[in-house]
Amino acid sequence: MKKGNRLTIFILIAMLAGIITGYIVHRNASPETIQKFSTNIKLLTTIFLRLVMMIIAPLVFSTLVVGIAKLGDLKTVGRVGGKALLWFVTASLVSLLLGMLLVNFFQPGAAIDLSNADTAGAKDLIGKTQEFSILKFVEHVFPKSVIEAMATNEILQIVVFSIFFGVAATSIGDYAKPLVKALEAVSHVILKMVGYVMNFAPLGVFGAIAAVIATKGLEVFKFYGLYLFYFLIGIALLWAILLGVGFLILKNRVPALLRRIAQPLLVAFSTTSSEAVFPKLTEELERFGCRDKIVAFILPLGYSFNLDGSMMYMTFASLAIAQAYGIHIDIGTQLTMLLVLMLTSKGIAGVPRASLVVVTATCAMFGIPPEGIALILPIDHFCDMFRTMTNVLGNSLATTVVSKWEGELES
Image 1 (cartoon, helix red, strand yellow):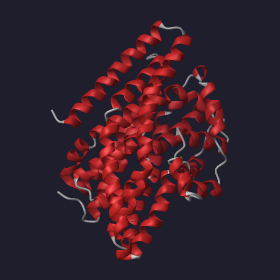
Image 2: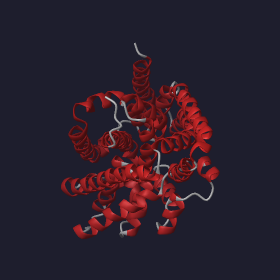
Image 3: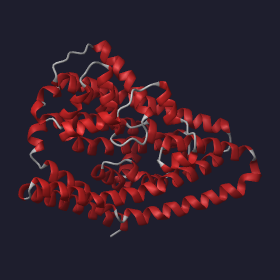
Image 4: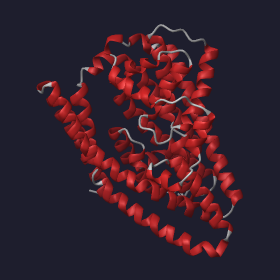
């Protein structure tokens, strides 16, 4: 059995073991014991995610600088970046619009019981919410210190610095070649580290699943079954749209792509972290046939600008909260909300549970009680599993499609 297949099986076993362990604890332990167990078992996930986080900044910097240097000139960088942004903006608008259409059709807010609100979790999120402005957006995009950006894993800021650095290195030609070659060696070393870090994935998956099932129990699905069901219909439709466009451009190579990214999708699903699979996804897309220079340039951008699953959930959740409170929002206002979400979602890279922070801020902006976020928090972890996996799919397709458009996709 291949090593990659073996790891996938271990991750699936860890998910199942996490569900069983969490359910046993939930049914038999006292609330104090459950809280203690959940806190302690999540340390496994924390260890795995921190190991991943430690290699993201050097990987993004080294691969992106080398990628730009290999692209050759500013004109090529602009052309590739333009194609990527065309995909990102279109996919984001489609995702937001799909969420808006589905929430109006299914009325999932009517299925939410006001008595099940998680008010403690809502207070924590409202505390993280800041008033969105152009100033905040600029602060999240442009770094004042690359060291600070790397320390806090602000991917978008690292991307901005790396683009400037890569273009400058390219412009001075042969003088920078030793540096570019050294950074290429660094990127290969980091990718080797990815293999070591991924061995901890089953433990991280076990900790994440066991903790949430121990705390919430399987009963949460009874109360929020309809809300989750309608959301999953939206995810299925979004996958159908993304894969449909993928088939139009990539033809019969889409199944091979899905097989290649199956493991990153599974890890993203079980840990609810897109960043947890960034290094592994980089490696798998290059193995699929995407040129390293395209992957290095497009994928970090996608992690800030192309979160399709999260985008769909933002309109879905915001309007569902309004429905739960019986607040009617006309179509014109909903479209305005869609455009606001399109902008504000780009300014919160690196914020934990970013989509919920954006939903909370948007609710406040449009007269919906921001504490309404408490209504959807109990089921949010399970929604997050699906939207995170969708984010990874969207970025994989974006990188592959741009590679195809550039004639840089090996067969």
